[in-house]
Every structure is written in C-alpha cells, then in structure tokens.
Amino acid sequence: MSTHAPRSVCVFCGSRPGARPVYAAAARDTGRLIAEGGWRLIYGAGDVGLMGLVAEAAQTAGATAMGVIPQHLMAREKGRARLTTMVVTEDMHERKKVMFMNSDAIVVLPGGAGSLDEFFEILTWRQIGLHEKPIFLLNIDGYWDPLLRLLDHVIAEGFAEPPLASYAAVVPDVETLARRLTAALG
Image (cartoon, rainbow, N blue to C red; front, side, top):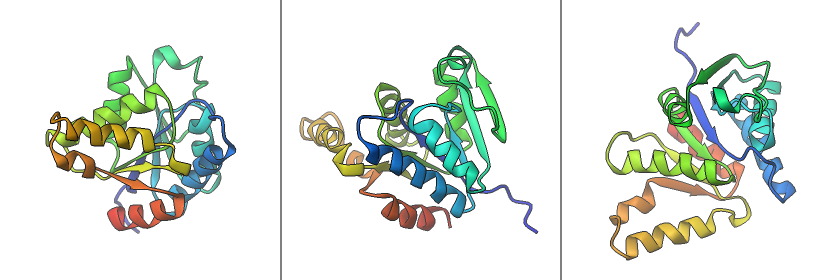
C-alpha cells in the first residue's frame, strides 16, 4: 500500500452556474474525472455554482476534497459541510496561496472575476518562474476565447513575451482535459 498522498488538482471556477447548462455539465464531468484519476480535489470550498457541482461530483465518485475558503465568504458561498479537509483563511490572497501550494495541477473552468483573478495570479507566478505546474483552461464552447485573444493582444503589444501564451494549455472539452491531466500527473 502506498503511503504517498494522492496527486491533487486545483479547480478554479464560478460560484454561479453560468447562463448555459454546458458549463454545469463540464463541472460535473471534471469532478468525476478527478475521482476517476485517483486525484484529490482542491477547490474554493463553496457549495454553490460550478464550484459546488465539481465537489459534489468528485466526492460522489469517491474523491477526497480539500476546500479552502476565506472567513468572509463562509455564509455567501455556503462552505460545503462534508469535505475531507476544510481550511478557512483570513483573506482571498491566502486562499489562492493555500490552494496553489496543495495542488499539482490547476484547472480553470468558466467563471467570473474571481476565476480570472485566480487564473492571472497563477499565470503570473508561472511567468516569473515561481512554478512549473501545469495550468489548463477548460474552454467549453469557446468560453475563454475572449481571454485568449486578450493574451495574444498583450503579447502583440509588447507587454509580455510570446511564451506567456503557452503557460496555460487550452483544452476544448473534459475528454481532452482527462488525457492531458493523466499525462501530467500519471
């Protein structure tokens, strides 16, 4: 029996379900994928939106889950009661740091300003050489296309070097994500 902790996948995603059912389906599929891979879910601890759907699917399929939530969001995001591990942080910055430090790979599903903040912080840390963890943008039905155009624009306008565009792997669906995560994490 192995004494090694399972590899962990950090998922950043919306605390709302989004306007289209395809986002909820992708969240559920991502949760199941994490369980099927034998990995641990690291996520924002909420029981709402895509966040709650990822956690419910992962745990239902047998994954352990570590939720990380700042104290001020406990009521708003309805911290999930049946997590394997719950970490309550003082603020959002500490939340991102704890999630990142406990993960082996990062997956970004559709989301709003919070998900963008999380993505850009992790991307920036990669750009300045603080880590080499794989980052995956799950581009369900082209959700992240405007973001990808913005990153290309930033590079074209001379505010970042071309490698910036390669620091996050863009995957169009959960099946592709499964292959890429398995290759990255084993």
